[in-house]
Length: 321
Image (cartoon, rainbow, N blue to C red; front, side, top):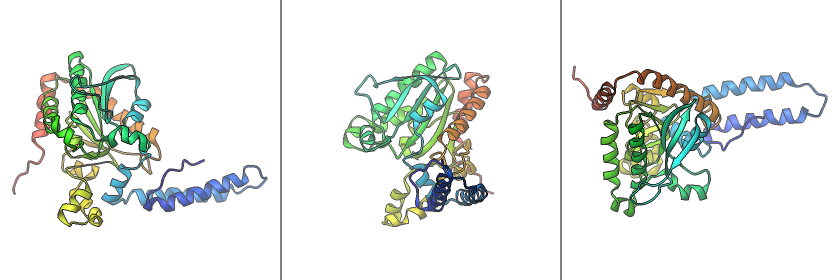
């Protein structure tokens, strides 16, 4: 049986055909009727429709997929590709921020440190996790985990998925901007490997707070932007309906970011997106992690930091003809 998920508007033809195929299979399950040829024809048509839709998504449609409620989050990736996860709590200054998780884990038996934004699976959990918008204590907890990684020579894997850092008065009073700025400085000079994956939303400074790395990847249907399309539309056009135009103008898709050399690569998702095949997306992420760790572990620490710094400094540099 096909796994049906909450559909977006442009996914409607796919969902309707999947339902039809399931109905046909269910109808013949306990009857002596052979309509396998018809089912096979519909499945081939489904594959064609999927490819046609997902190969031609607009930037705004990719933003919608990045926000899909069934898309795997940080704890899902941890469960699918890591073992022995031991979460740490609190920043030793104020509180434990559930919008950002951090801890120790194993990747095929090798010790690592993992950090990442975490959204909720339902309304209650989203309120508990503040919709993935971290407070200063979340970024300080993440740095606490990264300092442990540096001390014991463990690589850091960071999963970015946030609409942005929480902009509330309390967060500002506790030093939201300082916490993010401190993380940027410390991550630039952290004496261990850092791999960053934008798995959903990569919103502004909230994403950057754990987004400095030796390799930065964006999943095929994720996005990374200085502002949300809605925020950009509100500023430029004063109307939310212009969000699709803003998404196109912001050049926020993985393909655009790679072409501008802001990121190091695009992690291809299974056909239909990570929300339709979480395990396939997790396997693609794990394969990328293993490949990069093998390449970077042999590099001297001083060279690692120099290359990381130079990579950051080269963003936005251009030459006039």
